[in-house]
Length: 337
Image (cartoon, rainbow, N blue to C red):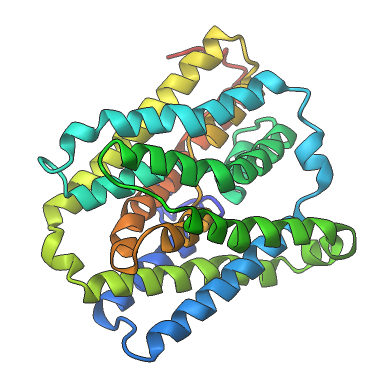
């Protein structure tokens, strides 16, 4: 998903929600008012899974092989991004455990843990890094590595974190993710030479598949949660607290990454890459994974924190990217401040 566009009021462009976020909010409203019922439920599920398979096939076909190997020489930067995504985030999630059952609904807290285990985005991290005048080749490599690692690490980490609270993830669910995400991606990679150029020239088509897959999966998962009594168990106060938790997680990660960049002596472009690849989470990967890893009645509530974080990361990310852009053009020195 692309970063939000500048708004109509100077200085407040970062407050403007992008078109896809508005579509996402509309999908939540539609699933609340008109959730899928009866024979329509399996039809939505089949359509969603088909679109997800097509989505990751396209991602594989579009991703140049050089993107996954060309920047591997910058091992320190790539390692820092992976450690942030799959270590720092889960540790923050565990640190929020005292809130579960006291300040926030336990099911939403499970969604927060799941969010913390997800890989980085592809489009948003690269787009924001580009705006911030960061190291774009390294961002492309990081996005590819994160998503490939996430196919195995996300179910493993989610299972470990849930096991500490009495939950579990089945191996059947893990293999379902491999079939739903990894195999289509690998098939697309094999056909990159034939399809990569064509897909690059038809970005509108790939954008429709990208957004369509997420919206259909969100509609199906959220509709099941609504019919299962989601809004009877989750209050407006829970939603407000959830937004605050998302802001807190993002703030802790960004501040930590800026400090790490300063301590390790990263250049300004590499610092921007670390911040914008390490602080975002993938909605495109998270929604289908949630539908496989969790029971249908839970999946809608599980992805709610992810959708909230998606909106928060886009709005704040666009603002931060503009600040990095100004730093790059003005020659301001990097630092932890």
